[in-house]
Length: 16
Image 1 (cartoon, rainbow, N blue to C red):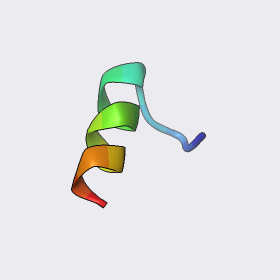
Image 2: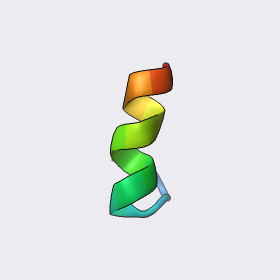
Image 3: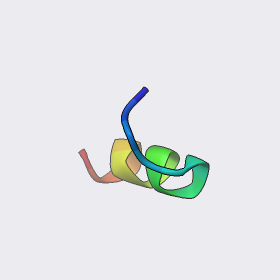
Image 4: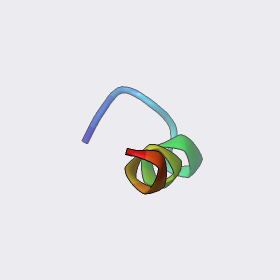
């Protein structure tokens, strides 16, 4: 887990 919202959390996982 990071320090972003739930919507950005899965978004970052898709990008990286």
